[in-house]
Image 1 (tube, rainbow, N blue to C red):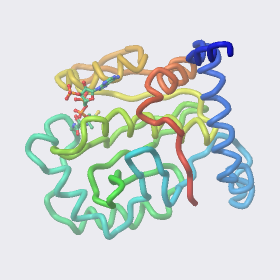
Image 2 (tube, helix red, strand yellow):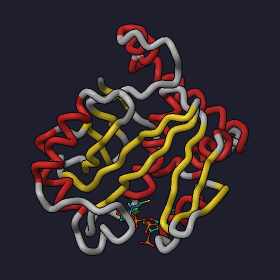
Image 3 (spheres, protein in one colour):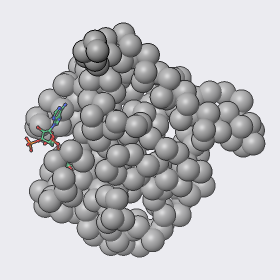
Length: 226
Ligand SMILES: CC(C)(COP(=O)(O)OP(=O)(O)OC[C@H]1O[C@@H](n2cnc3c(N)ncnc32)[C@H](O)[C@@H]1OP(=O)(O)O)[C@@H](O)C(=O)NCCC(=O)NCCS
């Protein structure tokens, strides 16, 4: 009997092609093209609000008015609010913002949950510029699993690529060193700055390469439910 041949890991180019296949399959399974047509959106990419995006250990669900008090508590947390824009402690303006958001097709606001259904954070996609999207409002509450930041970032990129986006842009406060280092590890490039912020963009090639490099955090990609 000949010894079983060893199972080799995929080469980097095979791994990249697997990611592209995974994203295409996910977009087809979710019926993104049909959904865009139903909404009369002829241009691609476009933001589509999913009810749920299911990952490996996390779920992102569309934010609703009922999430106002959770969002206020998260955004006014002393530690978490150091590098984000100021939020009123009043729940009412947050409810009004979420009411408007429900009819706003120019952004997607997700509540990040663990698989037990517990809310653990938020993330938002907005400011489409051609095939680039901006993401932010990214907060994960203290005590969440260590893998939550990386898995949620991978889910955002996977979802955006399934919608047809190619690249991303975002600003990070200069003092928010752990976060800009995080983005740089993903391949984001600094392309400008103001007194307070660094501006970054990340190209399609770097997004795909990070989805491939960190695939153990999102081994089966995402499943989208509209
Ligand atoms: C932004 C935010 C969600 C990032 O989450 P985070 O938990 O701070 O992310 P970290 O960079 O510390 O990563 C968490 C863990 O994953 C690990 N990790 C991060 N990137 C990784 C990578 N590319 N590969 C392997 N491990 C990685 C880290 O080492 C860390 O593990 P450790 O605690 O054992 O060191 C969180 O800091 C937050 O809620 N901040 C407040 C709001 C804010 O400033 N938002 C950003 C506005 S731009």
